[in-house]
Amino acid sequence: MSSSQSKVKASLGAVVVLAIAIAGARADEPTPAALNYANQILVDIGMKPSLDLVVPQMLSGLDRSITATRPELKDALRDTLVAIEPEFLKSEQGVVAESAKFLASRMSEQELKDTVTFFETPSGKKFIATQPALAQEVGSLARAWREQLSTDILARAHEEMKKKGADF
Image 1 (cartoon, helix red, strand yellow):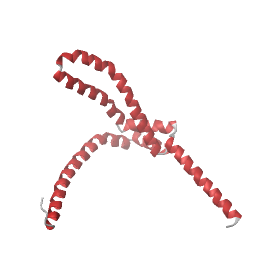
Image 2 (cartoon, one colour):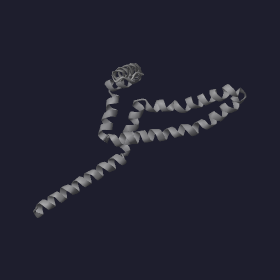
Image 3 (cartoon, rainbow, N blue to C red):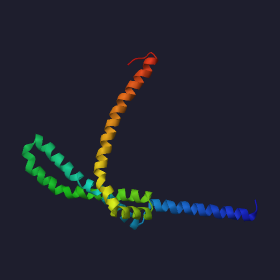
Image 4 (cartoon, helix red, strand yellow):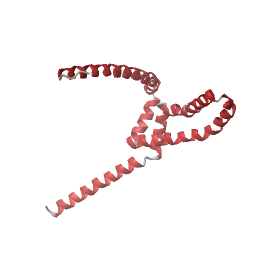
């Protein structure tokens, strides 16, 4: 190999290493703008409002559970739960921040910006508005499919085992 070929290969190697390092750094450390776009997407898709319900629902469930067996604690427990609620609401911020970081590490800043821009269009708004119904429909379809699949797999396995002389 000639000296010039060695230099070209070394230069290409350095470029590849640099590109990998830059890509790795981007994936590990999204820009503040990318994180802002990712946060906006999480709000747009309804993740944040969904998370906003978690703590109040858990506290309400705890209240019902305890007061069902210890009704005399009702007032003191409710006062306690109201007092500690802000502490647990703060923990939601960590979930949102980590979710935004995850999203921003998987999409470029431009892709995130394009997504936010799309969600601001009439089609994007319609897509977002359709999401709850879509999620419910997919859930129903998946449940029905799993139930049918369970029946079909059992019947097929039974049929094949019967051919082998093993019935169950």
